[in-house]
Structures are given as structure tokens and as C-alpha cells.
Length: 123
Image (cartoon, rainbow, N blue to C red; front, top):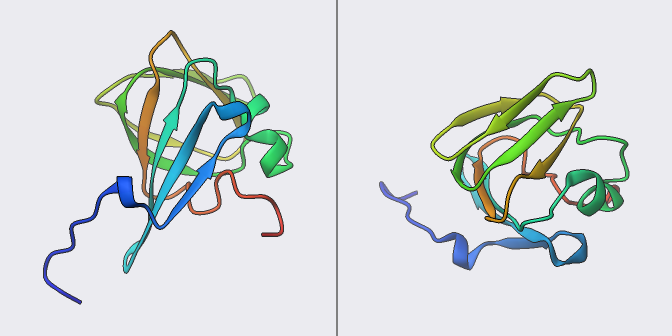
């Protein structure tokens, strides 16, 4: 291992498109684990654009990350909700839906929850 690793999400190890062309997940695999950049296009909603891929009733990923741009609404299965905005750190437990708010794409980085995100169950 070198002392410095610098990589671009534009040359990701894996790209997982969301249903309906509503964005994608760019995944980098590192010695410290996977890190992902998700690009959620306006109109993206987990229950419409990832649920068919995941095969679960709600998102079962535990997310720990940072919002780079855009806005997202997250609603837990129990009703708790939050609006995520640029510059914010987030931690979201499994069992939620989420969607882009407004006409700007939402870009988020995640260090925990994207390793299996938007990956067909069983693959």
C-alpha cells in the first residue's frame, strides 16, 4: 500500500444505474472498504427507482455520509423524517424511503451503506 491513494469517482470500480435512468451509484473499492457517490436525478424516489432492484419494502441499508449538492427527504418506516441539504453529514438507519426534493440532482457520498446498495438481491 502506498502512503497516498487518490482516485476519481469518474473512473469507479463499479457503476450501478437506478431504474428509469434516474441516476446511478459510482462505487470505489478501497483497502478500507467501499465508498460510494450517488447521483440522484430530479424525480428519483427509492421506492420507485431502487426498490425493484433491492426487492425489499423499504431501504435496508445503514447510511453514513455527506450531501454534496441537492436536497433529499428521508422518511423512516415509523414516520420520522428529515430533509438533507448540502454540507450536512447524515446517518440513516435501515427501514426508510427517500426522494429528491426540487429540480436539482442530489449528490451524496456514503462510507457505509452503498456496498450493497442498488444491487440485485442474490448478486
